[in-house]
Amino acid sequence: MTGERLADGYALVVFDLDGVIYLIDQPIPGAVETVARLHSAGRAVAYATNNASRRAADVADLLTGMGVRARPEEVLTSAAAAAQLLGERLPAGAPVLVVGAEALRSEISEAGLKPVSTADDSPVAVIQGYGPQVGWADLAEAAVAVRAGATWVATNTDRTLPSGRGPLPGNGALVAALATALGRDPDEIVGKPAPELFATAARRADGGRTLVVGDRLDTDIEGANRAGLDSLLVLTGVSDAAELLAAPPQRRPTYVSWDLTGLFDPTEVVRVPAPQADEGGWHVAVGADGWELAGSGRPLDALAALCAVAWWRHPAGPLRSASPEAAKALEALGLAS
Image (cartoon, rainbow, N blue to C red; front, top):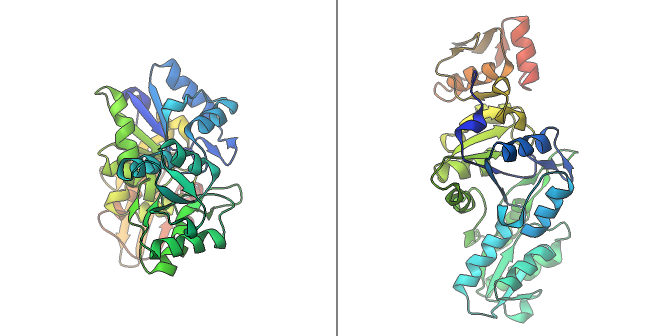
């Protein structure tokens, strides 16, 4: 992009949290300033998270404590959405086995249902969300309840959570463990990449355009695509350039940026894919033994040119550099062999 600020084209910006705004409990550099600039520019913001371990008010407090101005009504969580779904389907006071954090139990209570902890309480449903203390005993109770006929709802199936030490097991890993034991998948998965969280947020844009910002192709970007919304992948969390090049159509973003500064700095964001493999000073050649990057320019432009090749021509073999500048670009993108 040249000259135009990405944020100026949208009335609402919807952020994922982990890996986008913060990493565990520390704000990612530039995030606080970027959200403040959005507020100053009169842009509406919202936050959509698959993490079911905090309620909306808790998330807003966490963000505010980091310097990011946020209100509970701006936060959409998979825990609240899943609890609301069960509240609409089950009679008031129905017992629901909760596998997850205390926040998920609170959401079930708020929905007019009765949270329980064992299969002996004859739950009519099991709700499973991320909780750092979830263990084998919790999964065992859920397995017994589901086999007895309880409906099984997962708040989300994120395989990993970002951390300062790299990706750690997320709710999807625990859901997979239970699915292996039961020999089947959950009856319903509520969070991203299901489109409901983003569609709910987009209704607040009053007819304006909505941009989804996320760090995961398999949840944030796919969810935005399923909701019919533009998306920005930031390279501060889980998905990297190599995963982007291999992304299937449903997981391809509209834009890519190093971090949130790309919302206001045109030099820090690029639309993907480039219109052709020769773009932004770069040339990508495809041969029988792989593909080769030549030229010079911004690493992000090189990434856009590489996407133009990878997404339509699907070349096999190694990726090589044909110039010192290309070698530096591939190294910056984490694509150097």
